[in-house]
Image (cartoon, rainbow, N blue to C red; front, side, top):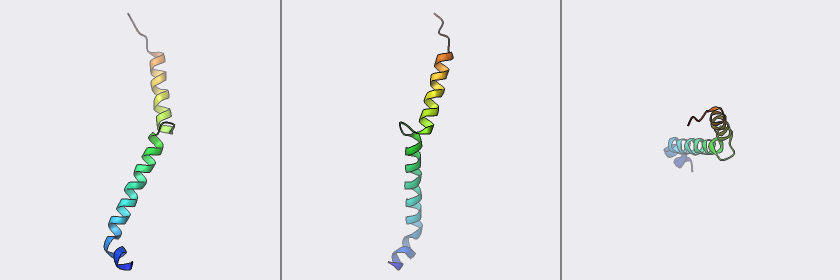
Length: 54
């Protein structure tokens, strides 16, 4: 076990960090995430203030 961690510790740490970044991004950008909510409210406000001329 010690040999495995000595040989592959960098790869293991990198893989865990990438998986953590993907998980955090998925939570933030998910359907009910804070970034999604802020973006949709921004678009809704923009569209409500836009004047459509015909």
